[in-house]
View 1: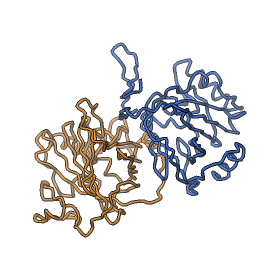
View 2: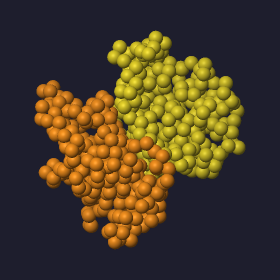
View 3: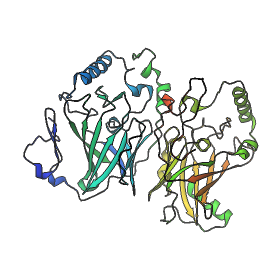
View 4: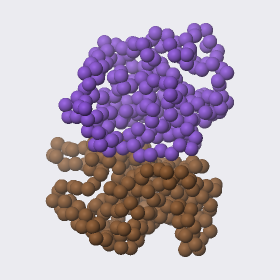
Length: 248
Length: 239
């Protein structure tokens, strides 16, 4: 297993240790801890990080309903069909999938809000830090409704109210409307790296909470171009042919 | 490019400018909706276009009369671009950071980064839908100058085209004693326009607005009712 995914059972005092199907995902060693309480900046997923939620070889802890969706998505991908993937129609990836691409993420901190602007598709996600509770009338969305709070140097983000039909990652693991994400975001290495521990729970699709850890690198001075999905697809129509197959 | 243009504007107007990048206690941060978008004036005083641009515009007007829209990137969910994007009724959020003023448009979920410093590396950027903007404070007015626009965007919803030489200069300020943010934009394009065109519109600040997710690709803000009519789904205070 990737060395970044330290499997340790007895280090509860060193930082959050979260149960995961097939093991335990632990936050980084205390020597990496940073007193910086800042997540703002332009970040990219570290080069050695995968774009799938789980580590290679880890089976998602899916209920029969979740497994059926995953199998259908996975089978379609195996056959070269992409039409089940919402993003091939340029629909938003939504959280947390938009955190698992190699395109930059611009995070902006203002007094009561952390805003994540994703270059891929140009999408915006807002995390409210003004103490509001979740809104029972919130219109379900791709990014869900995110409420955040600081716990020391860790920004904890709680997200619910997802739209139906999303994918958790490009492998086709489903994300349903009952999903709840808890992300623990904190700077490392003096603010040059960002660590995000993400746990998804969903009684409809998952048998147990499932956690992943991702690392991001700060890109000081980066300037972001436009990335309008429909422009790219029109320039490359083979990406989304009408029958769902990929033509060459 | 930007520095020299900035200097020229300052000289003409005879005002004392806050140097680009210098801290200011002023801010445009907040959430807004269009109090007066592209008002009547913007439809009555359209710019005089030159040669081929006038011909293209005439063709677009005719296509709109026939119900078939041509030459409008937003019809296919591509970028609206500045200034045309200001004509839509959706909410706008402005985030203010030391390095940039960030405009987040709910309509189409678009972003525009207005750099406060005269970044030399802007010149290495490809054209963007909303140009490559640099902004600075002049007293209570935030001035934004933009060049480097994607060429196929429109200046106006009726289809007014522009060339790659488009340059805009915006002057934004709160109307004294109100929460109304006025933007006066001078549009210059020596290739497409016979003379500069001035647009003005007003945004009303209302931080109670709830910014919504907008996915043009699924048409989720323009639902079609059972009677076949298209409506516009606005949220928060944007009524």
